[in-house]
Length: 151
Image (tube, rainbow, N blue to C red; front, side):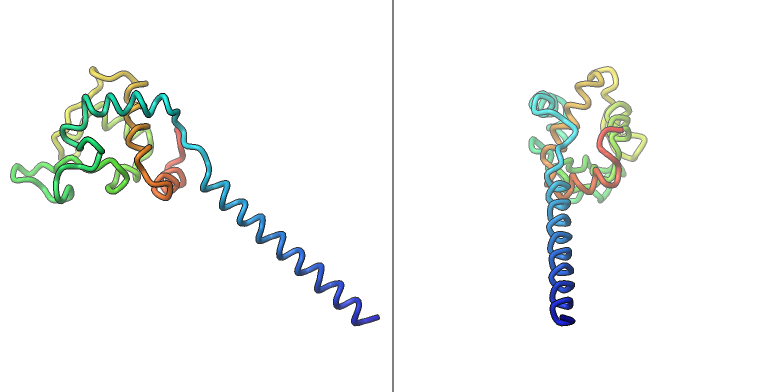
């Protein structure tokens, strides 16, 4: 009888452990598959706007054009960084990305002009949506965890 009780308890514990690991896996999967804040339409519009306004300095795939974007140029300014997830853009919350597009990069030591008068709010969001669509899932999730999606 005592042996039967031990087997029953062991079975219950093993079943509970098995259920827990499945819920952890499900939780991980749902986090990895969480949707991004933007729509396909925004990405499409943002790609066109990026090519028209940003690609000349940031590269047509947002890869950046400088060998080392962290190293100052001869004039002391910094080259435009990649925006494809390989540089620091993912460190910044959406409001700061918007402000940088508005004001430009001069206050930060760069040469990027401001686009406050050239792009409206929806267009700026579309540009951000496009370059964020290039970010690998891991980078996007780190950005989302660090900054939240749309703030």
